[in-house]
Amino acid sequence: MKTKSNIERILESGGFVVTSECGPPRGADPEVIRSKGALLKGVVDAVNVTDNQTSVVRMSSFASCILLKEMGFDPILQMVCRDRNRIAIQSDILGAAALGINNMLCLSGDHQKFGDHPKAKNVFDMDSIQLINTVKTMRDEGRFVEGEEVKGKPMLFIGAAENPFADPFEIRAARLAKKVKAGVEFIQTQCIYNVEKFERWMEMVRVRGLHEECAILAGVTPFKSAGMARYMKNQVPGMDVPDEMIEGLKGIPKEKQPEEGIKICVETIQRLREIPGVRGIHIMAIEWEEKVAEIAKAAGLLPRPQLT
Amino acid sequence: MIVGNRKSFEEILEMIKPYKKILLLGCNECVTVCSVGGEREVGVLASELRLWSAKEGQELEIREHTIERQCDHEYIDQIRPFVGDYDVILSMACGAGVQYVAEKYPTKPVFPTINTTFLGVTLEQGVWSERCQGCGTCILDKTGGICPIARCAKSLLNGPCGGSSNGKCEVDKETDCGWQLIVDRLKELGRLDLYEEIIPIKDWTTSRDGGPRKRVREDTRL
Image (cartoon, rainbow over all chains, first blue to last red; front, side, top):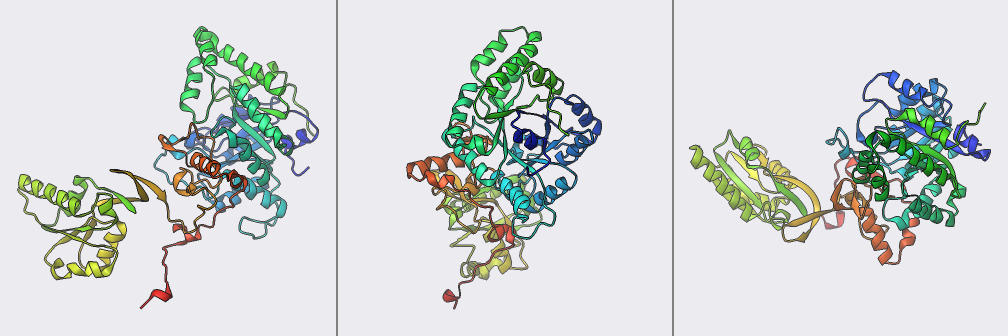
């Protein structure tokens, strides 16, 4: 065991991991984080905190993680390469570890064009794979990117995201292999709606044995409505939503659509759990955190293991 | 070549407002090839300015002149005999040209008429596309001859990101995903093995990040 991460501890004991996420507010009110956190209490093993997702300025992931930590959660610090160079990134890694954050998710980050500050200059001093390696080198070798010694190693469990549905499909497992080589220990995938395509990706992952070198947590997001499903398909980069799923939702009265969205999500989780190599579920209920408990319960993911 | 876009007529007018005698200086290199600052474009802008001055009843004297290069002092020296007759030089060269002309005539205002945009190629008549960002350490041997720094919106050295869809970039559906191009080309070359290698974090000291760059070749100096 390398860290105090709940994810690592559950994986080590052969357990199945459940994570969810908390999107910080576009303001300084800590109560937003606390009330979202309250909805996830006892339901998940660790909580992702997004880092200015879709390039919209929000309360920092770092600060929000600390608020959740104070509530007893094991937060996952998401960090994107868009906004920080290697100096700032490594500094935040040290700070996070010092304040008891145990997990980090290494991401490239959405392009700033999608957000509320499209005129910003982006950084991308490193990419997500190099970021994984940066954390790994700091933690395991006690060295910074350019070779100097780290005095007091940051004991973070290292995660990354992977989108099994992005193109070119044939190199998606190869890209995951690069993340593994760089030192990634867990992967949270993009929201899965097309389970068949995800199974094909997992097949490629298993052929390379990558599922044994890192834990794959399959991502799901419940639809609130047919409109949301359509939006995800057409507007969110790299999202694969089968047409029949959208049509199915459209055929249901509007007031019943949220219920159907939850039902689809629960069924998806049950199918994903059966896929060899899937070690956990990552539930991203976007601005719908109150449904995570219901989904986890219906999918048979509760109770969560009690860790001491 | 260096590619640019001409500034709007209004922006140029705003710059030259206080002046009456204008030397409109074209450049016969890159900006001529990308149709933005050569002899022809000098003529077009001069006509626009003359029409405006006639319409507005503003006194304006314009001399059109195009030199071989605005990035070499021997050509810039050619305007020395008459540069004193003008209040302002409107350079139609790239940013390097504008600055070098200004450097050579320290008492003369020199203004840009184009926005210098990128190092690129001519895709077809009237269409240019970026290929290089002059980072100072070329890795094209590792990426199938396609530059991820110039052609990936995030300059990812180990792409593509999760936003690559149907060969296009998440930033703009008209823009090719640089990493899709790299993967396709490596496949074509039978070198997908290169994709498996992690490209390490880059040393940006050779790029703009290292400060203004200068190259000296002792063997060619006089």
